[in-house]
Image 1 (cartoon, rainbow, N blue to C red):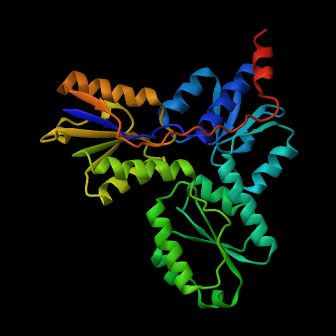
Image 2 (image 1 turned 180 degrees about the horizontal axis):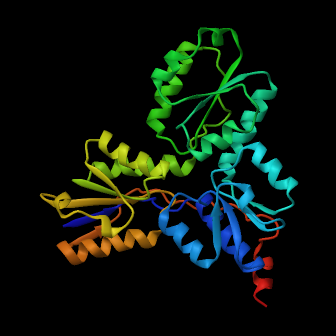
Length: 318
C-alpha cells in the first residue's frame, strides 16, 4: 500500500496562534486560565490544554472575577466582549485575525445602512460571533434554497454579504452566485472571506483525490473545515472518512485500496497524522509515503497579543 499526504494539511496560522495564546497565558499567569468555548475544534488539542490547566467554559458566570479569560479562535459576539470587559477579566483575544477581518466588514457594511446576508452554518460559533457584531440587520443563508426563500422586500434594500471563513469554497461560490442573480446590486467583501488555509486545504484534497482510492481526513466532528474536506473528497468521487485518530480506523475501509490519501483539518495536530501513518505501516505494510508534486507551502504567521510576547513568556520562566 502507498500513502500520499496532502500538502498543506493540519494547523493553520490562526489555530497555531490561538493554541500558543493559551499556552503563553498559562506560562505567564499560571493555572487556571479560562477559555470561552473550545479554543479550536479538536478533542486532542482541548484535552492536552485541559491537562495543562486550561478551563473551557461557555458562560462568563463560570469565570472568577479578575481571572485570565481567553476568547476562542472562532470569536465572540460584541455583547460578550462588552460583558467581559465590564467584569474586569484579564482578557486575551485568540480570535483568528481573518475572522476579525469579517467582523470589521460587518460593522462597516452595517454603518453604511446595508442589510447583511451571512453565508455560513447555523449554530457554528464563528457564525454566531460574526452575526453578533451588530444588533439586527443581518440574516443567515446556508444554501441556495435559503436564498430563494429570502423575503421579496429585501430587493428594495441596500444589501451586502459576508462568508464564514471555514466553509466549502464550492458551496460558498454557489450561494454567492444565487445571491448575485437574485440581488444584482448586492455588495461583496473587498477580499474573499473564505480564508487562505481553508482554500489551500480544499485544493490539496482535490489534487489528492486524483491520485488515491481512499482519503482519511483527520479532525473532530465539530470542526467545520474538517467536515468540508471530507465533503470535497466525496464530491471528487473518492470515498472519505473523518476520524479523530488512528484508533477510529476500520479494517473494511482498506479492502481493495492500494493508495490511501491522508489530510488533516486546520485544527488537527501533525502528531495525529503521523499516528495514522504509523498504524497503516504496521498493519498493512507501506511501500512509500509521498507528497504530491507542486504542493503549496504555507509560511503565514500571526503575531501574539501584547502581554504574551516572547519576552513576557521567557521572563515568566526566570
